[in-house]
Length: 102
Image 1 (cartoon, rainbow, N blue to C red):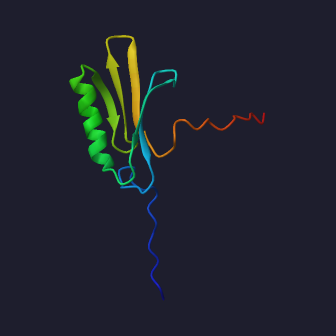
Image 2 (cartoon, rainbow, N blue to C red):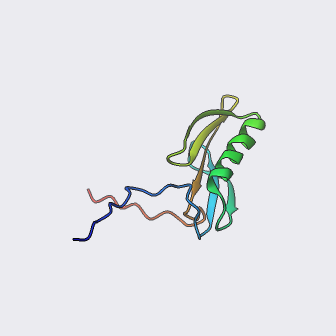
Image 3 (cartoon, rainbow, N blue to C red):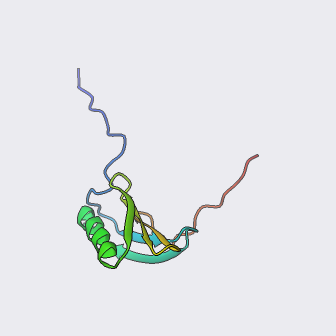
């Protein structure tokens, strides 16, 4: 009898990918403020940590971060807030249309 291995529920966002990924910064209203492409094969853990350090050294206050979702929130003064994350989806791609079925 062949032994079945259980597939992981989700793969790590920090695994090296053969496709391009992006570091994206949005404001509170999901407006894209900064988009930086990362080449295929980039060490995503290193890119994430360097982005955390870049924001911290630029005077941003890091409020919370998640290694699980490869994202963090940053605040500068009271009104300037950003959500920064790594995504395998091209941010230039328009979102799918929302269809309310109710």
